[in-house]
Length: 139
Image 1 (cartoon, rainbow, N blue to C red):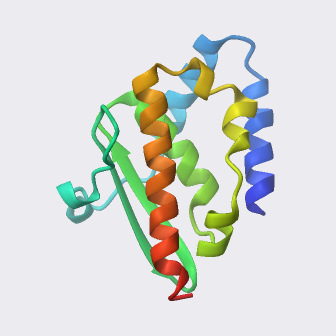
Image 2: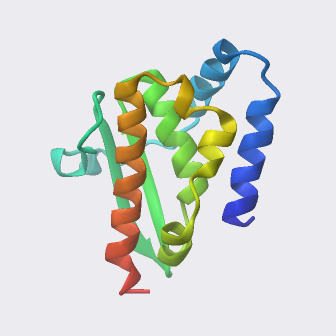
């Protein structure tokens, strides 16, 4: 499935919920389904700077695509990083670097987050794009 289609699927998935309490619950469920990050990757070097909660993000290039794993110590934040991993995981560096983030606004997520969580969301996206940029010369 293309990155754009994954984004569209998420927009449609969140549109099924009529209020933000249900959408937050869905984010929490996404976080519960996030594959566990390997313990050796849950280190300070993989902490996303700019997040109020602790968010670990690990990336490695495998067969030309960026494989992402993540975790967080906060439920909603873990859901946010799970949503981003769903979109950006196992994509080429070029796909990640060229991807629009407008799906976040189409979901309405950014406007319903506290300023600190919104900053954390931006920091997570920035970190994923930095990994992609670093790997872009290797693919």
